[in-house]
Amino acid sequence: MSFFVPSSVGWPVQQRTALIVALFITLALLGIAHLVLFPVYETNDDVGIRLILEGRFVVGAEPSGYAYFINLVLGQVLAALYRGFPAAHWYDLAEHGAVALAATTVFYCGIRRMRTWADATFLLLAAAIFLATFNAIQFTIVATLCTMVGMSAVLLAQQTALEPREAWAVTTAGTVLIVIGALFRLEASLLGLAVVTFIVATNRVRRPLLKPLRPKLLVVPLAGVGLAGAAWTFHWLTLAQSPAWQEFFTFNLLRAQLSELFLARLDREILAQAYAAAGWSIAEHDLLTNWLFI
Image (cartoon, rainbow, N blue to C red; front, side, top):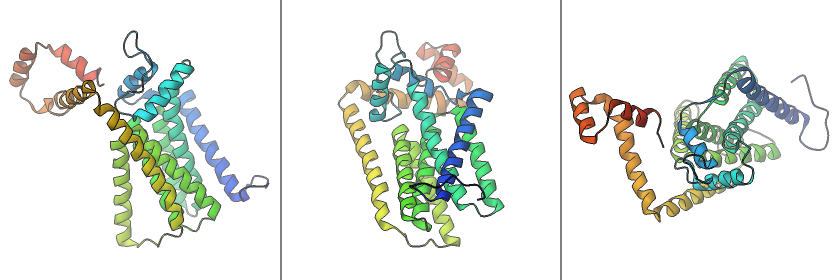
């Protein structure tokens, strides 16, 4: 790179420059998404989660961390922040902050490894993806994206000749992203893990991977996975003690089958009979399908 930040105590100048450029690109994308475009939630699931965390889902409620999809630990932290500082948009800050960390990690690693026009094209594609995510945020997308970027960063630190300090930093950033992804939505995080695993496995057929260069660094992501596992164990054990939550899980499973999965396959006469038996009108079903997801 032909432009550098003045050197001082700390990282070598190329690394510091790459980090500053990565931060600049991330902030620029955030600015475009919020000042030029019109930011929205991709689905109304996020609206419901945010209202629960804020204590505004029903009249007279208090901020609650029991937001169903996200982990209870993350929910309780956000609910506590809403109780202490209700004017701030903590859920939005958490989602956009997670994506910003993922974007900065991708741009930093991409800039450090950029050698060809193909590498530059990858960065442009990444910028388009992150801009779209900033503009239409959604917790499942956040979880999947963070996990995929985190896994890729951990693998990069293992498979490339990064300097030790830089390798630790990249591994730590990747681990934090993996944990964040798991806390936002476990299923989506596992999906991201499966996608990265598939890519690595298929790539290995064409070009075998090197041996891990820094096996000691694997302690960091393993600790992160353990932390995420502990958080979800706490989540499940806590909810398992509540019969009301168990009833809600049953309801939500049946609701998803009714409103999202099977209705398009049913004959109109069968639908009419089902509506009559339930005492529903088409409008009431549309409310359940298009508004009340949580």
